[in-house]
Length: 153
Image 1: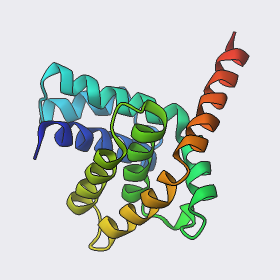
Image 2: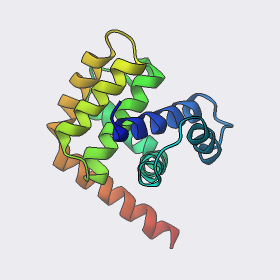
Image 3: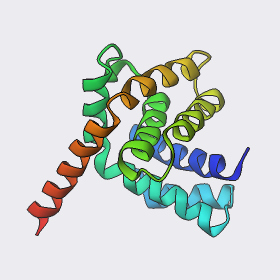
């Protein structure tokens, strides 16, 4: 497994665990995962950025997935697939440091490793739909982040 794929895999494991076990703190789960599968500092930081980039936006990401991919009701999506989608979606529509094709390919790889037999095709299809609206979605998220920051100050 490529180093950044391993970092994404750790982020996925943390997001999945905190998604299904609400009382597990992401920082603690990340620490445990990094003890089990150590990463170089830059890769551990990449995992951390994904986790703490996705978590505060989970509800927004889910709403946008539901809005732009309505043929896949979010409550019917397996938790692992949902978190794979959140990671890729955050990478290409929010962080924007990962090229869209790379984010989608990495998501499909994670789906092959952790999802069901149909997960890779499903993840690719949903992300293909979302990418058609990338600019619009980026603007919505940017506005929501600005509103949240404004209300905190």
